[in-house]
Image: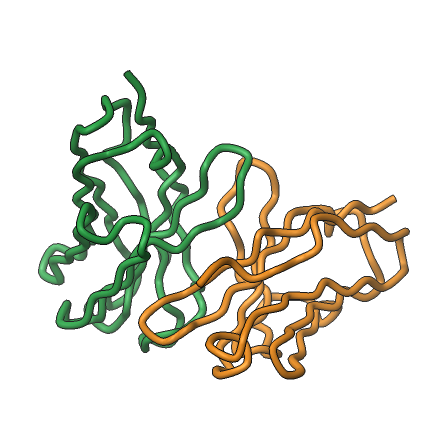
Amino acid sequence: QSALTQPASVSGSPGQSITISCTGTSSDVGSYNLVSWYQQHPGKAPKLMIYEGSKRPSGVSNRFSGSKSGNTASLTISGLQAEDEADYYCCSYAGSSTFFGGGTKLTVL
Amino acid sequence: QVQLVESGGGLVKPGGSLRLSCAASGFTFSDYYMSWIRQAPGKGLEWVSYISSSGSTIYYADSVKGRFTISRDNAKNSLYLQMNSLRAEDTAVYYCARAAAGTEGDAFDIWGQGTMVTVSS
């Protein structure tokens, strides 16, 4: 198995909404409701933004939402803000293994 | 304050060994699955290994199977990664991370600051 597939980059203007997709297979994303999303700013450790596909940890803005359809999970950020500019990674459990996506660089124009 | 602090990184020659440690504080360490996750310079995240709360269940990524060994000492609130037969492609920042709800497959809610491992002659 290999990493989950994410677009290399996405961009949006302040106030807009963007969606990042994460495509896996029936062995990972499609089989488990255990997709998570992480935000990483340069030189920092990743931060959990979404877990179990659509749940937000305490303290994470409700501008961040997650969903899943079949083998593809998605992260939507609404009302883009400058501080949202970062790398975003999806992650899925795959039964005795875990896979990350290749990462998506979000640029806020 | 919930915290994970890694140590033990450094420069090692190809074929060499290194042992990473991760000290946990601010939570009941023995209740949680733990993982090591790495990130090569300029690259994405790669899951390396999982260990259950008791240490009885362990998984590895194919890329490190047979070379790396994960372990934990719940009495010392510590997680370890013994890395043998190191290769240039193992060069990365190594993070320890906590599985959120203490069960297999959970998201990683707490991360350490990372420790850099460089494999080079």
